[in-house]
Amino acid sequence: MRKLMVSCALSAAMAMPAMAAVEVYSDSETQTSVKMYGVLLGYSGASGKTGVESTVGADYLQGLQVNSRLGFDTTIDKFFIRFELGAQEPGMINGNTTNAPGIRKFFGQYDLGSAGKISVGRDDSPTVEGGFNSDFLNQDTGSTGFGSVITGNRDMQVAYSNGGYKVALITD
Image (cartoon, rainbow, N blue to C red; front, side, top):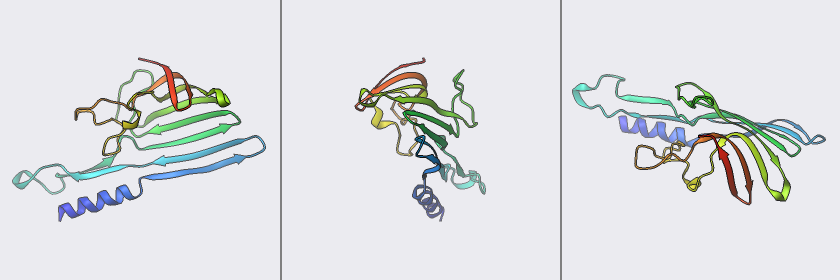
């Protein structure tokens, strides 16, 4: 019965993990728009306790995944601004991780047309492993602790991108 409950909860959580961007403001005359988006991802399952050591409710885990987020994208002509809050994020100044919501991304970007884009702020760091930013649970810790490296770092940076390539000066 427990396996059935865990399977049903997992199926329900994966069926509706993302909310598409919703345009909350648009002005075609000034080429300005604001879109809101969010993703709430949860986890649930058994903690591995069996038999006598198990108590009612103590062997069941549930919560909000650390990469759940709510954000706003604002476009004003050739300027783009993204502000995104995450469920659990390291501080932007000291890097300490807390179990509290924090600023996940906050950057501005200017579109230079065919010459590329310049962005300044906190964003995903460019990496050669960009296709592996997430693990099988869709967390952006890149399977850390299971033989992999963290590829989903978000750092303060000045970046230039063009043609799918990105180069950045990032904080250490």
